[in-house]
Length: 163
Image 1: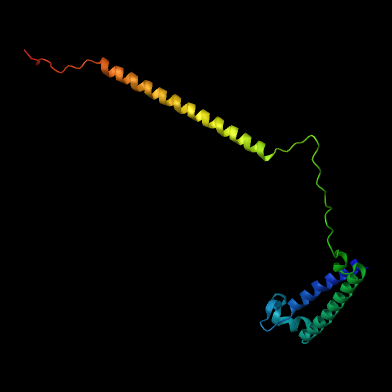
Image 2 (image 1 turned 90 degrees about the horizontal axis):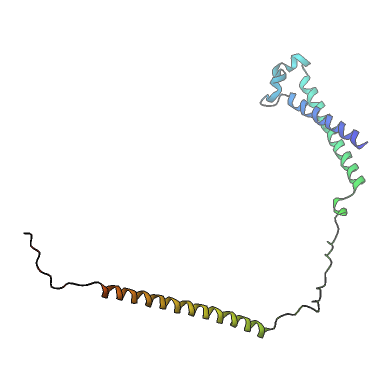
């Protein structure tokens, strides 16, 4: 029944739109498509009065169908607010699992000790690397000094003659 009344309602809406467009308004609107000023000759001298009365009648039927269909919908389905839950369900709370007996958490002292051991290793490695670099530099300087001493330097050389 509801679907049948909805189809009739749609047909009434289309017919009402067409009749409104056929009427000659103050600016003659779209009435010119169907003859506009010649409306009286086509439908008779009182065609404008007839179209106006038909428009009012179909408009009344349109509003009547609107009320009937809205009442049918509200009675069949109820309010939308009735379907909304008043409070949202809370998710279940999960309890924390206890630590297993085999797991041991490190104490603060052991963590400090581990950090200190790591820092000592880094310091020793840095120190030994620095010592090695200093030894390599000293070795290079010593080699350079030997090379300089090995090169003979002539301070008193006889003049070179071209003849």
